Image (cartoon, rainbow, N blue to C red; front, side, top):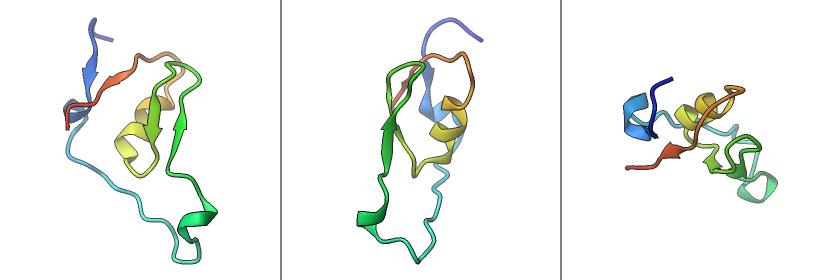
Length: 64
């Protein structure tokens, strides 16, 4: 991994996931705190989800 912080835009264009229609907003949460880097992860952005699944990673620089 390169030194320094990775920018979210370096991971490509936004990739939003779609919740199944059977779920309503009150049934799920759109974010969580990553246990590795302690950054809040937007679960509607697949780029962030993939990044934070890596066992050893740094926090992303949110530049969008």
